[in-house]
Picture: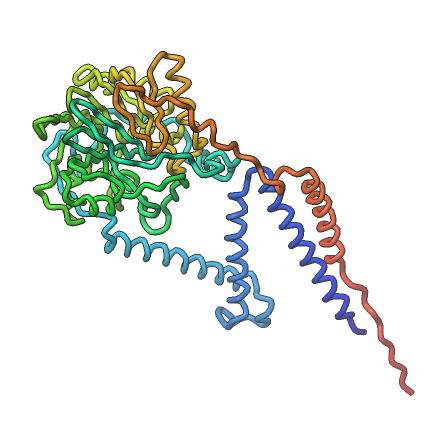
Length: 479
Protein backbone atom coordinates (compact mmCIF):
# COMPACT_ATOMS: atom_id res chain seq x y z
CA UNK A 1 0.00 0.00 0.00
CA UNK A 2 1.53 3.41 -1.04
CA UNK A 3 0.29 6.94 -0.29
CA UNK A 4 -0.11 9.29 -3.22
CA UNK A 5 2.80 11.70 -2.84
CA UNK A 6 1.54 13.95 -5.63
CA UNK A 7 -1.76 14.38 -3.82
CA UNK A 8 -0.01 15.33 -0.60
CA UNK A 9 2.18 17.90 -2.34
CA UNK A 10 -0.77 19.45 -4.17
CA UNK A 11 -2.79 19.67 -0.94
CA UNK A 12 0.09 21.33 0.87
CA UNK A 13 0.58 23.88 -1.91
CA UNK A 14 -3.16 24.59 -2.02
CA UNK A 15 -3.34 25.07 1.75
CA UNK A 16 -0.28 27.33 1.89
CA UNK A 17 -1.51 29.43 -1.02
CA UNK A 18 -4.89 29.74 0.71
CA UNK A 19 -3.25 30.85 3.95
CA UNK A 20 -1.15 33.43 2.10
CA UNK A 21 -4.23 34.77 0.32
CA UNK A 22 -6.17 34.89 3.57
CA UNK A 23 -3.36 36.81 5.28
CA UNK A 24 -3.15 39.27 2.38
CA UNK A 25 -6.90 39.86 2.53
CA UNK A 26 -6.77 40.32 6.30
CA UNK A 27 -3.96 42.89 5.98
CA UNK A 28 -5.97 44.71 3.32
CA UNK A 29 -8.96 44.70 5.68
CA UNK A 30 -6.79 46.24 8.41
CA UNK A 31 -5.56 48.89 5.97
CA UNK A 32 -9.10 49.77 4.90
CA UNK A 33 -10.17 50.13 8.55
CA UNK A 34 -7.33 52.55 9.50
CA UNK A 35 -5.38 49.81 11.29
CA UNK A 36 -2.35 49.81 9.04
CA UNK A 37 0.10 50.07 12.01
CA UNK A 38 -1.07 46.54 12.93
CA UNK A 39 0.24 45.45 9.53
CA UNK A 40 3.71 46.62 10.56
CA UNK A 41 3.50 44.27 13.53
CA UNK A 42 2.42 41.45 11.22
CA UNK A 43 5.40 42.13 8.94
CA UNK A 44 7.71 41.95 11.97
CA UNK A 45 6.14 38.62 12.96
CA UNK A 46 6.59 37.30 9.41
CA UNK A 47 10.24 38.31 9.48
CA UNK A 48 10.65 36.42 12.75
CA UNK A 49 8.89 33.41 11.23
CA UNK A 50 11.14 33.49 8.17
CA UNK A 51 14.19 33.79 10.38
CA UNK A 52 13.03 30.85 12.49
CA UNK A 53 12.51 28.78 9.32
CA UNK A 54 16.00 29.63 8.04
CA UNK A 55 17.62 28.78 11.38
CA UNK A 56 15.66 25.51 11.59
CA UNK A 57 17.47 24.33 8.46
CA UNK A 58 20.79 24.58 10.29
CA UNK A 59 22.12 22.23 12.95
CA UNK A 60 21.33 24.65 15.79
CA UNK A 61 19.57 22.87 18.72
CA UNK A 62 19.28 19.70 16.63
CA UNK A 63 20.99 17.28 19.05
CA UNK A 64 17.91 15.40 20.19
CA UNK A 65 15.87 15.98 17.07
CA UNK A 66 15.13 13.04 14.83
CA UNK A 67 13.88 15.16 11.91
CA UNK A 68 15.67 18.45 11.25
CA UNK A 69 13.13 19.43 8.59
CA UNK A 70 10.22 19.17 11.07
CA UNK A 71 11.48 20.89 14.24
CA UNK A 72 9.69 20.11 17.47
CA UNK A 73 7.96 22.71 19.61
CA UNK A 74 10.90 22.65 22.02
CA UNK A 75 13.40 23.38 19.26
CA UNK A 76 11.23 26.14 17.79
CA UNK A 77 10.93 27.72 21.24
CA UNK A 78 14.71 27.68 21.60
CA UNK A 79 15.17 29.22 18.16
CA UNK A 80 12.64 32.00 18.83
CA UNK A 81 14.19 32.68 22.23
CA UNK A 82 17.60 32.99 20.60
CA UNK A 83 16.28 35.40 17.95
CA UNK A 84 14.61 37.57 20.60
CA UNK A 85 17.77 37.52 22.71
CA UNK A 86 19.88 38.60 19.71
CA UNK A 87 17.46 41.46 18.95
CA UNK A 88 17.38 42.65 22.57
CA UNK A 89 21.15 42.43 22.78
CA UNK A 90 21.47 44.58 19.65
CA UNK A 91 19.07 47.18 21.06
CA UNK A 92 20.80 47.27 24.45
CA UNK A 93 24.31 47.40 22.98
CA UNK A 94 23.46 50.07 20.40
CA UNK A 95 21.62 52.12 23.04
CA UNK A 96 24.53 51.81 25.46
CA UNK A 97 27.02 52.80 22.77
CA UNK A 98 24.90 55.83 21.90
CA UNK A 99 24.55 56.93 25.52
CA UNK A 100 28.25 56.43 26.22
CA UNK A 101 29.84 57.78 23.07
CA UNK A 102 27.38 59.99 21.15
CA UNK A 103 27.86 63.72 21.49
CA UNK A 104 24.10 64.14 21.08
CA UNK A 105 23.56 63.09 24.70
CA UNK A 106 25.53 66.13 25.84
CA UNK A 107 27.38 66.67 29.11
CA UNK A 108 26.89 65.46 32.65
CA UNK A 109 25.13 68.13 34.73
CA UNK A 110 26.14 68.18 38.36
CA UNK A 111 24.20 68.94 41.55
CA UNK A 112 22.83 72.45 42.01
CA UNK A 113 22.21 74.69 44.96
CA UNK A 114 18.60 75.41 44.10
CA UNK A 115 15.38 75.05 46.04
CA UNK A 116 14.00 73.32 42.92
CA UNK A 117 16.77 70.67 43.02
CA UNK A 118 16.60 67.82 45.53
CA UNK A 119 17.33 64.10 45.61
CA UNK A 120 19.46 64.43 42.49
CA UNK A 121 16.76 65.94 40.25
CA UNK A 122 14.73 69.06 39.57
CA UNK A 123 11.04 69.04 40.49
CA UNK A 124 7.90 70.78 39.26
CA UNK A 125 6.08 73.26 41.47
CA UNK A 126 2.87 71.22 41.22
CA UNK A 127 2.37 67.46 41.52
CA UNK A 128 1.38 65.39 38.51
CA UNK A 129 -2.35 64.98 37.92
CA UNK A 130 -2.39 62.84 34.77
CA UNK A 131 -5.69 61.01 34.31
CA UNK A 132 -5.10 59.23 31.01
CA UNK A 133 -3.85 55.69 30.43
CA UNK A 134 -0.51 55.12 28.72
CA UNK A 135 -1.68 51.64 27.68
CA UNK A 136 -4.83 53.06 26.15
CA UNK A 137 -2.81 55.68 24.31
CA UNK A 138 -0.37 53.03 23.06
CA UNK A 139 -3.30 51.03 21.65
CA UNK A 140 -4.61 54.16 19.92
CA UNK A 141 -1.32 54.37 18.01
CA UNK A 142 -2.48 51.21 16.20
CA UNK A 143 -5.21 53.33 14.56
CA UNK A 144 -4.18 55.76 11.84
CA UNK A 145 -6.80 57.58 9.77
CA UNK A 146 -4.21 59.70 7.95
CA UNK A 147 -5.02 62.93 9.78
CA UNK A 148 -1.78 63.15 11.79
CA UNK A 149 0.23 64.10 8.72
CA UNK A 150 -0.60 66.82 6.18
CA UNK A 151 -1.73 65.31 2.90
CA UNK A 152 0.45 67.61 0.82
CA UNK A 153 3.47 69.87 1.04
CA UNK A 154 2.74 72.62 3.55
CA UNK A 155 2.65 76.15 2.13
CA UNK A 156 5.35 78.41 3.52
CA UNK A 157 7.08 81.70 2.79
CA UNK A 158 10.71 82.07 1.83
CA UNK A 159 12.52 83.70 4.71
CA UNK A 160 14.41 86.98 4.39
CA UNK A 161 15.83 89.06 7.27
CA UNK A 162 13.86 92.21 8.06
CA UNK A 163 15.21 95.76 7.87
CA UNK A 164 13.94 97.38 11.06
CA UNK A 165 14.26 100.83 12.55
CA UNK A 166 13.53 102.42 15.90
CA UNK A 167 11.41 100.32 18.24
CA UNK A 168 10.12 97.96 15.56
CA UNK A 169 10.17 94.29 16.49
CA UNK A 170 9.87 91.52 13.89
CA UNK A 171 8.78 87.94 14.54
CA UNK A 172 9.17 84.79 12.41
CA UNK A 173 7.88 81.30 13.20
CA UNK A 174 9.66 78.35 11.57
CA UNK A 175 7.36 75.62 12.84
CA UNK A 176 7.31 73.72 16.15
CA UNK A 177 8.89 76.00 18.78
CA UNK A 178 11.55 77.81 16.73
CA UNK A 179 10.90 81.57 16.93
CA UNK A 180 13.11 84.34 15.55
CA UNK A 181 12.83 87.86 17.01
CA UNK A 182 14.52 90.77 15.25
CA UNK A 183 15.04 94.39 16.22
CA UNK A 184 17.20 97.10 14.72
CA UNK A 185 20.15 96.13 16.94
CA UNK A 186 19.44 92.65 18.30
CA UNK A 187 18.44 89.25 16.96
CA UNK A 188 17.15 86.47 19.20
CA UNK A 189 16.15 82.88 18.49
CA UNK A 190 14.18 80.56 20.76
CA UNK A 191 14.69 76.77 20.71
CA UNK A 192 16.25 76.64 17.22
CA UNK A 193 15.71 73.26 15.53
CA UNK A 194 16.46 73.19 11.82
CA UNK A 195 17.29 70.48 9.28
CA UNK A 196 15.77 67.07 8.67
CA UNK A 197 17.43 64.52 10.92
CA UNK A 198 18.56 65.85 14.27
CA UNK A 199 15.58 65.82 16.61
CA UNK A 200 16.23 62.49 18.30
CA UNK A 201 18.95 59.90 18.89
CA UNK A 202 19.82 57.27 16.30
CA UNK A 203 17.10 56.79 13.69
CA UNK A 204 14.08 56.82 16.02
CA UNK A 205 13.33 60.53 15.76
CA UNK A 206 10.25 61.82 13.92
CA UNK A 207 10.69 63.15 10.41
CA UNK A 208 9.64 66.79 9.92
CA UNK A 209 6.77 67.67 7.62
CA UNK A 210 7.63 68.71 4.10
CA UNK A 211 7.54 72.49 3.65
CA UNK A 212 7.30 74.43 0.40
CA UNK A 213 10.44 76.29 1.51
CA UNK A 214 13.08 74.61 3.63
CA UNK A 215 14.72 76.60 6.42
CA UNK A 216 18.36 76.11 7.25
CA UNK A 217 20.57 77.72 9.84
CA UNK A 218 22.47 79.42 7.04
CA UNK A 219 19.30 81.38 6.22
CA UNK A 220 19.28 83.16 9.57
CA UNK A 221 20.83 86.57 10.17
CA UNK A 222 23.66 86.74 12.76
CA UNK A 223 22.15 85.66 16.08
CA UNK A 224 23.04 87.65 19.19
CA UNK A 225 21.17 85.55 21.78
CA UNK A 226 19.94 81.96 21.77
CA UNK A 227 17.24 81.14 24.33
CA UNK A 228 16.73 77.49 25.30
CA UNK A 229 13.67 76.35 27.28
CA UNK A 230 14.86 72.81 28.13
CA UNK A 231 17.15 70.09 26.85
CA UNK A 232 14.78 67.74 24.99
CA UNK A 233 15.94 66.86 21.48
CA UNK A 234 13.13 68.77 19.75
CA UNK A 235 14.19 71.99 21.56
CA UNK A 236 17.94 71.71 22.05
CA UNK A 237 19.62 70.69 18.79
CA UNK A 238 23.35 69.96 18.88
CA UNK A 239 23.92 70.93 15.25
CA UNK A 240 22.19 74.28 15.75
CA UNK A 241 24.25 74.93 18.88
CA UNK A 242 27.50 74.22 17.07
CA UNK A 243 26.50 76.40 14.13
CA UNK A 244 25.60 79.28 16.45
CA UNK A 245 28.79 78.91 18.48
CA UNK A 246 29.53 82.63 18.53
CA UNK A 247 26.12 83.58 19.97
CA UNK A 248 25.34 84.22 23.61
CA UNK A 249 23.30 81.43 25.21
CA UNK A 250 20.55 82.00 27.78
CA UNK A 251 19.69 78.62 29.29
CA UNK A 252 18.19 76.83 32.33
CA UNK A 253 20.36 75.39 35.10
CA UNK A 254 22.30 72.35 33.94
CA UNK A 255 22.11 72.98 30.19
CA UNK A 256 25.56 74.59 30.22
CA UNK A 257 27.03 71.08 30.61
CA UNK A 258 25.60 70.14 27.19
CA UNK A 259 26.76 73.33 25.52
CA UNK A 260 30.34 73.12 26.77
CA UNK A 261 30.43 69.48 25.64
CA UNK A 262 29.61 70.78 22.16
CA UNK A 263 32.33 73.42 22.18
CA UNK A 264 30.54 76.54 23.45
CA UNK A 265 32.79 78.46 25.86
CA UNK A 266 31.37 79.07 29.34
CA UNK A 267 31.86 82.80 28.82
CA UNK A 268 29.09 82.64 26.18
CA UNK A 269 26.59 80.96 28.50
CA UNK A 270 24.33 82.32 31.23
CA UNK A 271 22.35 79.83 33.33
CA UNK A 272 19.15 80.72 35.19
CA UNK A 273 17.00 79.31 37.97
CA UNK A 274 13.26 79.98 38.17
CA UNK A 275 12.38 83.60 38.81
CA UNK A 276 15.96 84.71 38.32
CA UNK A 277 16.15 88.09 36.57
CA UNK A 278 18.92 89.78 34.60
CA UNK A 279 19.69 92.76 32.40
CA UNK A 280 21.61 91.05 29.63
CA UNK A 281 22.14 94.19 27.53
CA UNK A 282 21.24 97.87 27.47
CA UNK A 283 18.15 97.03 25.41
CA UNK A 284 17.02 93.75 26.91
CA UNK A 285 16.12 92.33 30.31
CA UNK A 286 14.86 88.82 30.99
CA UNK A 287 13.26 86.57 33.62
CA UNK A 288 13.39 82.77 33.66
CA UNK A 289 9.94 81.63 34.77
CA UNK A 290 8.67 78.12 35.68
CA UNK A 291 6.84 75.61 33.53
CA UNK A 292 5.25 72.25 34.32
CA UNK A 293 7.41 69.80 32.38
CA UNK A 294 10.53 67.58 32.65
CA UNK A 295 13.96 67.19 31.02
CA UNK A 296 16.61 64.68 30.01
CA UNK A 297 18.62 63.52 27.01
CA UNK A 298 19.86 60.16 28.29
CA UNK A 299 19.06 57.67 31.02
CA UNK A 300 19.00 60.29 33.77
CA UNK A 301 15.87 62.43 33.74
CA UNK A 302 15.23 65.85 35.23
CA UNK A 303 18.93 66.54 35.79
CA UNK A 304 18.58 69.92 34.05
CA UNK A 305 15.94 72.56 34.65
CA UNK A 306 13.10 73.47 32.27
CA UNK A 307 11.07 76.63 32.05
CA UNK A 308 9.77 79.64 30.14
CA UNK A 309 11.13 83.10 29.35
CA UNK A 310 9.84 86.62 29.87
CA UNK A 311 11.80 88.99 27.61
CA UNK A 312 11.60 92.80 27.61
CA UNK A 313 13.11 94.53 24.61
CA UNK A 314 12.45 97.96 23.03
CA UNK A 315 9.46 98.57 25.30
CA UNK A 316 7.94 95.24 24.17
CA UNK A 317 7.15 92.39 26.57
CA UNK A 318 7.38 88.85 25.16
CA UNK A 319 6.63 85.49 26.76
CA UNK A 320 7.96 82.16 25.47
CA UNK A 321 6.44 79.11 27.17
CA UNK A 322 8.71 76.31 26.05
CA UNK A 323 6.91 73.04 26.85
CA UNK A 324 4.57 72.49 29.76
CA UNK A 325 1.19 71.53 31.07
CA UNK A 326 -1.35 74.02 32.34
CA UNK A 327 -0.76 75.08 35.95
CA UNK A 328 -1.73 77.83 38.36
CA UNK A 329 1.70 79.49 38.15
CA UNK A 330 0.67 81.15 34.86
CA UNK A 331 -1.41 83.60 36.92
CA UNK A 332 1.55 84.26 39.19
CA UNK A 333 3.78 84.97 36.18
CA UNK A 334 1.12 87.23 34.67
CA UNK A 335 0.71 89.19 37.88
CA UNK A 336 4.45 89.62 38.42
CA UNK A 337 5.71 90.17 34.88
CA UNK A 338 2.73 90.88 32.63
CA UNK A 339 1.05 92.16 30.71
CA UNK A 340 2.73 90.74 27.62
CA UNK A 341 2.38 92.13 24.12
CA UNK A 342 2.62 88.61 22.71
CA UNK A 343 2.88 85.14 24.22
CA UNK A 344 4.33 82.18 22.30
CA UNK A 345 2.55 79.31 24.06
CA UNK A 346 2.70 75.62 23.30
CA UNK A 347 -0.33 74.12 21.57
CA UNK A 348 0.39 70.66 20.25
CA UNK A 349 1.54 67.13 21.08
CA UNK A 350 -1.06 66.81 23.83
CA UNK A 351 -2.80 63.69 25.12
CA UNK A 352 -4.69 62.66 28.24
CA UNK A 353 -1.83 60.28 29.08
CA UNK A 354 0.57 63.21 29.55
CA UNK A 355 -1.83 66.06 30.23
CA UNK A 356 0.27 67.29 33.15
CA UNK A 357 3.22 68.18 30.87
CA UNK A 358 1.48 69.33 27.65
CA UNK A 359 -1.53 71.63 27.35
CA UNK A 360 -4.74 71.12 25.40
CA UNK A 361 -5.85 73.97 23.07
CA UNK A 362 -8.43 75.39 25.50
CA UNK A 363 -5.75 75.44 28.21
CA UNK A 364 -3.40 77.29 25.88
CA UNK A 365 -5.99 80.04 25.51
CA UNK A 366 -6.60 80.10 29.27
CA UNK A 367 -2.85 80.38 29.87
CA UNK A 368 -2.77 83.45 27.62
CA UNK A 369 -5.47 85.06 29.77
CA UNK A 370 -3.64 84.11 32.97
CA UNK A 371 -0.46 85.70 31.60
CA UNK A 372 -2.29 88.91 30.63
CA UNK A 373 -1.16 88.43 27.03
CA UNK A 374 -2.58 90.78 24.43
CA UNK A 375 -1.84 88.35 21.57
CA UNK A 376 -1.29 84.59 21.45
CA UNK A 377 0.88 82.78 18.91
CA UNK A 378 0.42 78.99 19.29
CA UNK A 379 3.67 77.02 18.91
CA UNK A 380 4.88 73.41 19.29
CA UNK A 381 2.92 72.22 16.25
CA UNK A 382 3.04 71.85 12.44
CA UNK A 383 6.40 70.10 12.17
CA UNK A 384 6.46 66.69 13.87
CA UNK A 385 4.02 63.95 14.82
CA UNK A 386 4.54 63.41 18.55
CA UNK A 387 0.93 62.71 19.56
CA UNK A 388 -2.34 61.29 18.23
CA UNK A 389 -4.21 64.46 17.25
CA UNK A 390 -4.55 65.77 13.71
CA UNK A 391 -1.65 67.86 12.45
CA UNK A 392 -3.83 70.98 12.07
CA UNK A 393 -5.99 70.44 15.16
CA UNK A 394 -3.95 72.67 17.52
CA UNK A 395 -4.11 75.71 15.22
CA UNK A 396 -7.78 75.15 14.45
CA UNK A 397 -8.88 74.60 18.05
CA UNK A 398 -6.85 77.48 19.49
CA UNK A 399 -8.21 79.83 16.82
CA UNK A 400 -11.82 78.81 17.50
CA UNK A 401 -11.39 79.05 21.27
CA UNK A 402 -9.65 82.42 20.93
CA UNK A 403 -12.51 83.78 18.83
CA UNK A 404 -15.04 82.47 21.32
CA UNK A 405 -13.29 84.22 24.19
CA UNK A 406 -12.31 87.40 22.30
CA UNK A 407 -8.57 86.76 22.43
CA UNK A 408 -6.35 87.92 19.59
CA UNK A 409 -4.65 84.85 18.08
CA UNK A 410 -2.03 85.37 15.40
CA UNK A 411 -1.28 82.45 13.10
CA UNK A 412 1.52 83.34 10.68
CA UNK A 413 2.40 80.98 7.88
CA UNK A 414 5.62 79.05 8.19
CA UNK A 415 8.53 81.43 7.56
CA UNK A 416 6.29 84.50 7.52
CA UNK A 417 7.79 87.57 9.21
CA UNK A 418 5.61 90.31 10.70
CA UNK A 419 5.89 93.39 12.89
CA UNK A 420 4.58 93.08 16.42
CA UNK A 421 1.46 95.20 16.79
CA UNK A 422 1.09 95.98 13.07
CA UNK A 423 -1.19 93.88 10.85
CA UNK A 424 -0.33 90.65 12.60
CA UNK A 425 -1.36 87.66 10.44
CA UNK A 426 -4.52 85.81 11.32
CA UNK A 427 -5.28 83.81 8.17
CA UNK A 428 -6.45 80.24 8.66
CA UNK A 429 -3.93 79.08 6.06
CA UNK A 430 -4.03 75.44 7.19
CA UNK A 431 -7.62 75.14 5.98
CA UNK A 432 -6.37 75.59 2.44
CA UNK A 433 -4.11 72.54 2.65
CA UNK A 434 -5.69 69.75 0.65
CA UNK A 435 -7.84 67.47 2.78
CA UNK A 436 -6.67 63.88 3.12
CA UNK A 437 -8.35 61.68 0.51
CA UNK A 438 -8.14 57.94 1.12
CA UNK A 439 -6.59 56.09 -1.84
CA UNK A 440 -8.75 53.88 -4.04
CA UNK A 441 -7.40 50.74 -2.36
CA UNK A 442 -8.93 51.98 0.90
CA UNK A 443 -12.30 53.37 -0.21
CA UNK A 444 -13.28 51.50 -3.40
CA UNK A 445 -16.36 49.30 -2.94
CA UNK A 446 -15.15 47.09 -5.78
CA UNK A 447 -11.87 46.44 -3.95
CA UNK A 448 -13.89 45.65 -0.82
CA UNK A 449 -16.09 43.17 -2.68
CA UNK A 450 -13.03 41.46 -4.18
CA UNK A 451 -11.41 41.37 -0.75
CA UNK A 452 -14.33 39.56 0.91
CA UNK A 453 -14.80 37.15 -2.00
CA UNK A 454 -11.08 36.39 -1.92
CA UNK A 455 -11.35 35.69 1.81
CA UNK A 456 -14.06 33.10 1.12
CA UNK A 457 -11.96 31.57 -1.64
CA UNK A 458 -8.92 31.47 0.66
CA UNK A 459 -10.92 29.70 3.41
CA UNK A 460 -12.16 27.12 0.89
CA UNK A 461 -8.61 26.54 -0.34
CA UNK A 462 -7.34 26.03 3.21
CA UNK A 463 -10.12 23.55 3.95
CA UNK A 464 -9.51 21.59 0.75
CA UNK A 465 -5.76 21.60 1.32
CA UNK A 466 -6.23 20.35 4.88
CA UNK A 467 -8.15 17.22 3.86
CA UNK A 468 -6.19 14.01 3.98
CA UNK A 469 -5.39 12.66 0.52
CA UNK A 470 -6.91 9.40 -0.52
CA UNK A 471 -4.83 6.28 -0.08
CA UNK A 472 -4.13 4.32 -3.24
CA UNK A 473 -3.61 0.56 -3.02
CA UNK A 474 -1.14 -1.12 -5.22
CA UNK A 475 -1.65 -4.90 -5.40
CA UNK A 476 0.99 -7.23 -6.75
CA UNK A 477 0.16 -10.77 -7.72
CA UNK A 478 2.85 -13.39 -7.56
CA UNK A 479 2.75 -16.93 -8.71
